[in-house]
Length: 596
Image 1 (cartoon, helix red, strand yellow):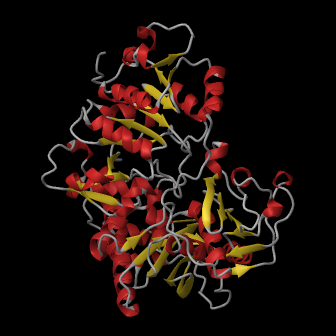
Image 2 (spheres, rainbow, N blue to C red; image 1 turned 45 degrees about the vertical axis):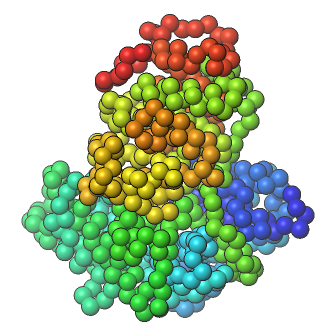
Image 3 (cartoon, rainbow, N blue to C red; image 1 turned 180 degrees about the horizontal axis):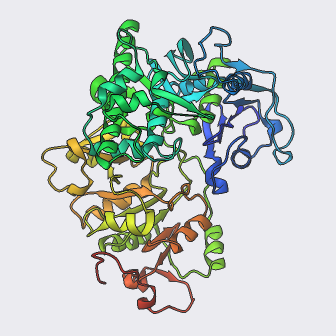
């Protein structure tokens, strides 16, 4: 560690998706969500994530120049107090405290972290979102729009970023955000709020926006472009809000139904999606014109919605929109630290982040110890080329492969380090991944990964697809693409892989293309139903043996369950000396599985 370097720890101790991030001289050196490390949903102080960041930075908490905490406890206390006495969630924005900081409290660091840091700063929740977006963007000057369900008594912020400073235009009072309505509608559709809003997004692709005007009436008042939720459409049931009788009447149901029809569920989701696109788009267009700007940064949980981001890109131009790699609560740890570095310490902005591989990585010997401890059969590919060859052989045989390489990604999306990959041209690949591994709903699409150099031959997209934060559109002459991955309107979920950011995954795509129609693979997150992405080797091995995965490529070790193991030829690598189980005892029957 450079003795003169500044070390800023960002901490997001929120009710969901808590995380920590360590910045050294303004550059992220470690970041991870707490849930991924402890393998369950957590809230509050992310102790495991903090420990990882300090260990990764080779420091203790006494070496920290500052801990930046992504919340304002006083504002949260006021909000909870108002809710307890039954006052609707309509806090008025004030000018007080808009510098976003409070220096009078310290994080509850556990003894294992060391002593107290030099200072602690509490940063307003939405300023963390804004800082995480603007200070990681390529823009020197831009509008910043933050919208989420709520935090620190508000639901969003409108600001201008210029150089290394943010200037607040307006705070959005809670619950005046499309994200709050999105949460309530997610619950109405039978999904889990604060966890499954992405299901609402994808369900909407299957329906017609028949009730769009109802949602527009809910989301804003006539004559105003600012979001303003009409609470007459909702009612309080204990601590939760649910849609009211007025809502049901407006969508044509005189009585509350015990269960919405599938057609109506799809239409409600589609209507909400279209209304959000219009409300956010009109507000952004007005502010860009008023402030004389042509670029915009979006952040907050609402902008985990890639269909929304894609629609906004179409309206404002590819390359003029930026969304940070983790726009939701997890990204607030990075944002809080960035706020301190630039807004408080006045340091110049560093170059925009080139990747998000900020999580734990493991040595080959550590991986081998786990495999041996689990009594797993494996072969060791002695070179990178042999590992890639073995993986390509499995993919060409129609196998579904867990791909575990390097440091874990930060954020909710797998970007080629903790991924499940397969040939998109293999028979029944989507059905097999859904039925035997992910156990997902039929309407949720899978993503494709493509090399940057080849992307323009098949797709139209922006740089946001590098972190899968937007959507791509297929080119009309790209007739080799598997149709089942193409969504309505020619859209497709896409990861664009740059050679300098992920050379190994890039090489795998290129090698695969030597025997396939294009350098494209299906890429989905390496996790089982209801679990965070795998991080440690033991997580990967457990998921592999507990699911219908055909093979696991972890570091240079290759594990295979079926007779496809003969594809990993003896001359290509060292095979563990464990007794070989007959192939027919390990083979997993699949819909349309290829015979070896």
